[in-house]
Amino acid sequence: MGKLDGKVCIVTGGAGSLGSAAARLFVAEGAKVMLVDLGTADLNKAAARLGEANVAATAADVTRAQDVRNFVAATVARWGKIDVLFSNAGNFGTVAPIASYPEDVFEAVYAVHVRGAFLACKYAVPQMNDGGSIIIITSSIVGARGAPGVYAYVTAKHAQVGLMRSLAKELAPRRIRVNTLHPGPIDNSFQKAVEADLSKVMGRDATAYFNETIPLGRHALPAEVARSALYLASDDSSFTTGALLMADGGMSA
Image 1 (tube, rainbow, N blue to C red):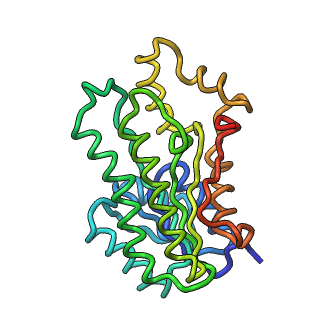
Image 2 (tube, one colour):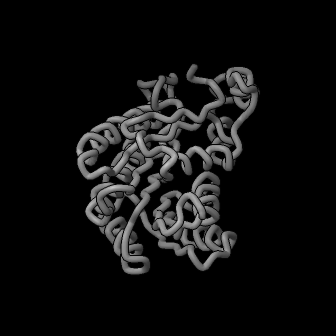
């Protein structure tokens, strides 16, 4: 018996390292998974790597309501229900002083993280059964702290926590649990791109800096953070809702 036997899960950002690792773990625990991502080629590669009959893929822009309606409808058409929504799509933006921070970048980052999560919940929730259904939103360690110059990403990650808390209160009578997952730095291409920008601003190696500030002394592996997502998706967290789960190696301690 797997922890997600018979569960139907949507994973947005499914072609990225965390989305793919979570999907792999969910399938191993008995789930059926709809992978969602923007780029068709990357998405198809991610689905092929899983190589499972219980995996499907739908390309979508999570900021577009019709695209979100489409992947929700495709999931229900294939498997008849939605038990777990893992809203994990993300982008970063840039690092710049407030006076020169690009407004279009701010809006684009906010749209993916906040509007994207909002739309996913708006259209998935009516298809979720009372009791045993789960929503997980990937925030970040910076969803609980600040970082100079990272205005779009930090603001969006804080906003996701507000969305989660409101949903947790609304959906508790239906016994649908809603939580945010807060990774610290992950050893993946997304984080490497972030750290390349930060290195220029800081004038030193940002990767080394983060490893010095993480009490466990290293970046997380995608599979490690995926196990935190599994905890939130499974009955192991049956009395956990409205919570911020930090998977950050102790950075927020």
